[in-house]
Amino acid sequence: MIFDDITNDHRLWAVRFDGEGKNELMKVFYDWADVTWLRSFFKENINDLNAYFKITDINQAISDTIDDAKRLRYLMLDISPEADLNKIFRPLDNNQASDAMLQKEKARLKGAVRHSSWLRLYAIKLTPGVYIITGGAIKLTATMQEREHTRLELVKMDKVRRFLLEENIIDDDGFIDYIGEL
Image 1 (cartoon, rainbow, N blue to C red):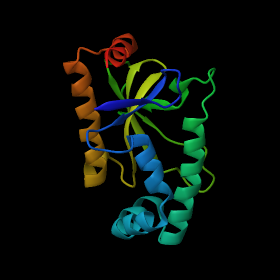
Image 2: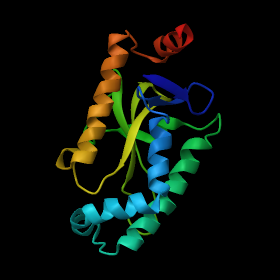
Image 3: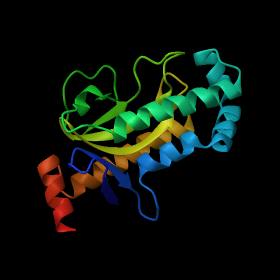
Image 4: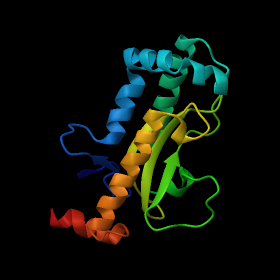
């Protein structure tokens, strides 16, 4: 497992799993810009798209995804040193009120023009303001457990969290020490 410093200031990282050429952040943005990939995804998930978002036009779903992905990419990659990542990420569990060690988090666009954004980035919070992106998905259902592609994102979050705990990393200081030893 390799970790790429996305913002070059040790606040936002992305995991690159063994054998992968790209980190998880770059992989999701690549998929979300690929019309062929999106068309296949929305054809396969048209019932969820219609049930939850009342959209039946795959071309509209593709266009909306590409637009939202551009906005989310800009938000994530053009973070100023003063930006507060805690305003972008929220606990994965909407009912969670307090911080947990290596908490699972999600990021999504707010204030989408057409409908709520279905794009999600998933991360582990090392400490407030310091996150490791573990993946992302197009979430068209109420819970992640309902579909295989979102269940896979839960597995990736668990894998990264377990790795960090096995390396005795419980915060950003431990993580920076780990990175420095590589």
